[in-house]
Image (tube, rainbow, N blue to C red):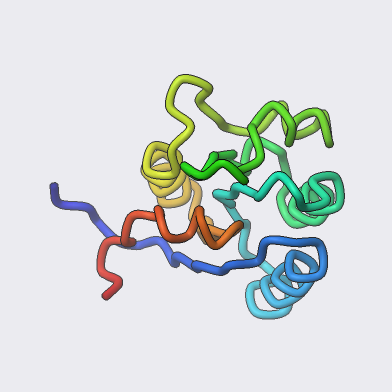
Length: 137
């Protein structure tokens, strides 16, 4: 498959409230005028409310967030993330295929269309499942 790579993709293992806040501050300082699109999944033992609040603070609309689940027993269920912050119910997710690959593909398409930066972040388990971004080695 040939993919046109015109999207800046940032991979980060921010997976708890302090790391999320640091990531958000860095994104805002480095790309203050560019919209962000985020693919994220968490471990169930993290403060899902604080993590969600941090992410919601950097996007214009919750639909710019894509929720996924790692294939790991410690992964937070999408439903738990939404329970922690009901605004996350307006995000992109697929309860039939909760994998990162589906949401990264959708997010890349939307980020390119909307001239957004794509941030893929969350648990270490999730990041190990992230498909390589086209053009990144």
